[in-house]
Length: 73
Image (cartoon, rainbow, N blue to C red; front, side, top):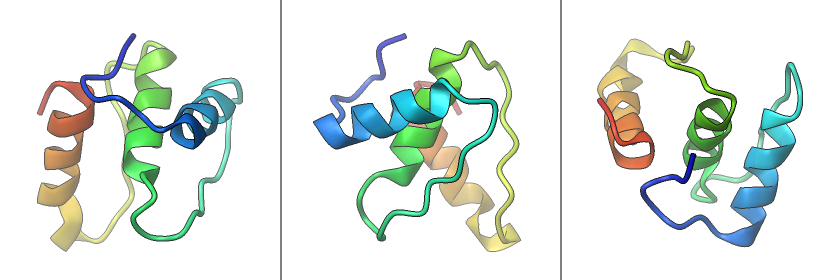
């Protein structure tokens, strides 16, 4: 599935890395697109739901990230 935005080559590689494994950990520096990579990896595996573990204050932000990178809210 092609994401609604164009990822940078390093983001494509990161998403591919995560999608090819049952479990992975993405701990890059802030602002480098971890959200886009994680969402793209989930979608490429055919996921229809995702569990994001984050502080409650970031819930709305993650919903926006899924709408932005995944095409749904």
